[in-house]
View 1 (cartoon, helix red, strand yellow):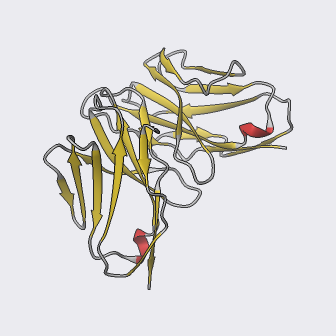
View 2 (spheres, chains in turn yellow, purple):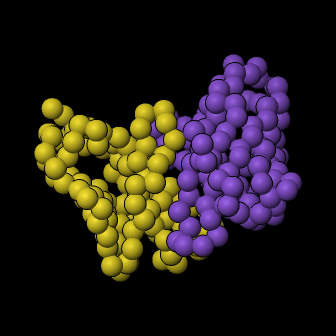
Length: 110
Length: 114
């Protein structure tokens, strides 16, 4: 089993839709969790850190479920500009090796 | 620009040649990471430095790969005797010592081995 798994998609959704991605991790000692956005042939950019209590940033909401070992990302009112690959990242100790999932590709259609 | 900087952005080399990439992290970040990414995959961890100390190396890092961070600032990644399978995007990231440790990436060096 891979350390971090994601559904590769693609998720094709119309503008304005709500879409959710999950990411599961195998290491129960994982301490910190992140969502990154990556545009085609560009570097990953930090979208949000994921806190135990969950957190929201505008149209984006991240949740952590330690018992089931997954994190989720919810995007409300999708925009065309949200089209990208969304990577989750997990590390077992603050500042140590980040393990990335393979990414989930999202296409928001007009 | 105060972000992570990588040089060169693109490198085409012939099989068997050596290549070296440079990464300049965000100035106050003492942690530096190297990752490799191929099409359709997430970044794969290669190695990690805290200041000048190389604390972790992936099994992916064969003896043809070496990384240094001599003064705890910029880092170099060298690949000796390149193979076609080394063709990938090589990404550098840095993170601060405090907080939850978010990593910030440079724009990457795209290596093509022909």
